[in-house]
Image (cartoon, rainbow, N blue to C red; front, top):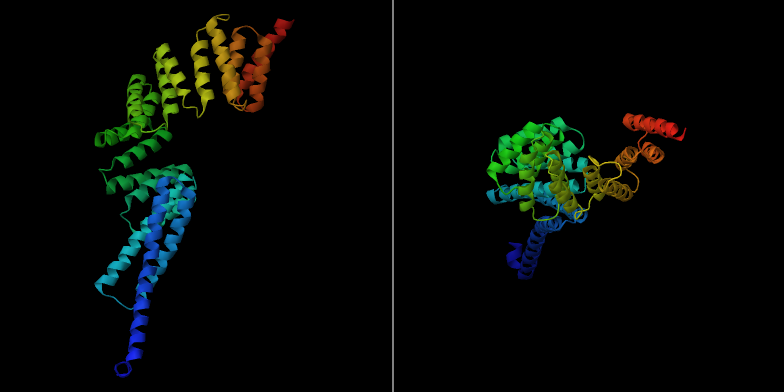
Length: 355
């Protein structure tokens, strides 16, 4: 009645209502836009920045849910919007969890994945990713339980089988790792990780030729250089075990191109040359050269290259040098009984030789 009598008042009130509704709508979009921005940042690999943006998104989405719930409107449209906000909140927690996981913040990632599942119990990816975090924190049983649940919920997802294969491999359940990796491959034959995991399992089961075949397949499928060092190194070991020396050498030298831990490739080359080399042969010279290189690249922080180098000098009957190098290895690893035993042997030999 009052509004109709005073046109200016009516115009003012309508304008305020329009401003409030626009303000409310723009507010409800902030959570959505920051979620999309956070996801985009996550896929660029800037996980720290992504986690911060997604944290802001979570705050906005929570505020927007509260406003919708306290609006006093319970029509289908409002209820649908509330449900949509809950789904987007689950997404925000999931991708923040993924960001934490990639930064190896395992406990924080588990918390976010658990919140995701509280909001959406069908979010199977959150279960699978949480399983990996549980494993990294040492909760291997809980990890396998999560993956079992994920597989029951989505038995046609090759990633879940591949992840369980990876964890079985780490737990030394090699036969189970082969079964899970094979299942993943049967669903997706272009899944490089599944071939790599199965190859590793075959290697530990001493089925070297099958391992080599799977390593080769994983190399063909890899789109980037990740794992290539480990693959060529492992493949070289398999060739070594089936007495294909030239192939083993080729694999080790290829591994050196992907130098995450080049000292291991040089150490394996040293073992390859030194294994059957006579004391004063060219092969022994090469073995010592590679072993010295391995020790230098490890910054003398690894006892394995030094221990093997000492054994090569011992083979050459240079007992003084063998003793000195083994003493350095002992300084790095005081509690290795084998190192101490060999040190005593070298010490006795050098004393006899001196006398």
